[in-house]
Length: 309
Image 1 (cartoon, one colour):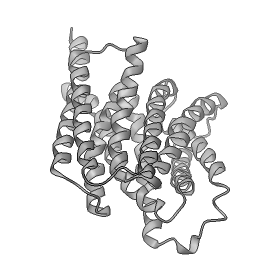
Image 2 (cartoon, one colour):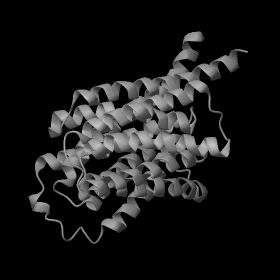
Image 3 (cartoon, helix red, strand yellow):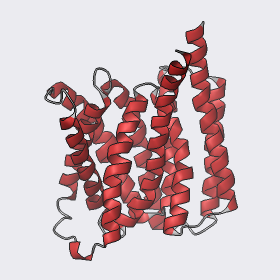
């Protein structure tokens, strides 16, 4: 019984860790795709494919015939923020700045903004351990970003890309907060499918003018392989895992686990894109992960203590 309980408590964190590993790899794959396709087209292909995969899974699931306009509206509204707006800015940033900038800006600022919202609205307590972990993670991110700045100049294009990443971080924070309510009374697969589907439709409308101007014959096989990977891994699987994890933990905890993204994103960027990597970035990444672990495990320990009282 105890082993089952411990496994049940660990499962949400494993789901979130899977999401963050896939999100980290998405920066590298998406950078490859925007090298040959317009950023709005790239975003549409990723989430159009992901929505199609999720829809098939939902149709194969028992009870898939159940449909509610209320559920579609709730999940769709979240999708407009976390799928459409987030990825519009995400891919826009990738077309202007290195993926390593986004690897730090997006996952670090998302939990900061989420935590700030809950602290201001007093909807969740801020323990000393959590605040310390959050501050430690942000400090590590600053060190990491300092290492990135030492590898090249900050041009106007790169600065614009970084602001796009900032907007993406704000969108993800809002998505995490609103999605918690969406999951009330709705299973993760259905919520993920609805949110991704509505977000993909919005991305399609934005990409519509660029579609006829795209030189499809010039798109390489490697780019198409990355599009397929993005649709399956960092979209269908990652978003589903995120909703599964978010169902059992708070939005603050869910976004705090995004501090693990820089590690995965940095490794893939260095291996597959050849982007710069320094010893300072290693130190920053280690500090960031340590802070994330402290913030997440402290909440879990507090909750377990309360349950055992």
